[in-house]
Picture 1 (cartoon, rainbow, N blue to C red):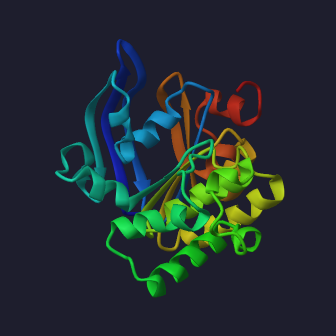
Picture 2: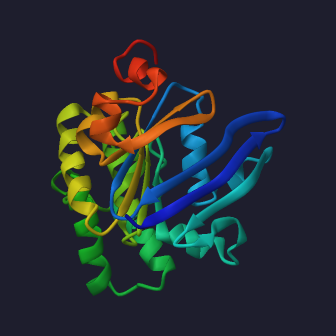
Length: 250
């Protein structure tokens, strides 16, 4: 299967501390890859490398290559254009101090779309896909920061979808969302993978099992094992992987 994202001998340090060590990993195109492992094993740092939000960590130093579509992201001339291709949803909602409507319309406006006849359908579609439209359709002018925590998280997802990203990175997206809505969004992600590569960091092992096509297990800043999800959960090659997916530690 064609790799959409490739990590080639990537090591990331925060100051003197190694947070991701000698990572080589291929992420298949238009599939869902789940990243699992104990806390502080490098999972979120991996996501930050894909769209270069690692740049916002002053002490970070990256060696090796991270390729998206064959291009090294750390050598691109326009990092903002790169980030428009890669949607990012963080563990806790990061709402802009704008209305619900403008939160979703923000990125399309920056891309040059200003006509309401084009913006309105984009906003509605993204809110629907984030399972939020029915709850906010009558208050699109309300500040997004006044929504509940779970609603703000879904608003963040809607904003990430607003430019139809070719890659969607999700870092614990369901942490502030109720289980019923989480399952509905998982259904949406399964549909999305027909046109989007999805990389999902999750501490919910069963979420990785039911949602992903491939799973990568990290521990102590290293990739321990990666493979088809069914194999990782039922026939892991490494004893450490088996112990983790069986809940012996976490």
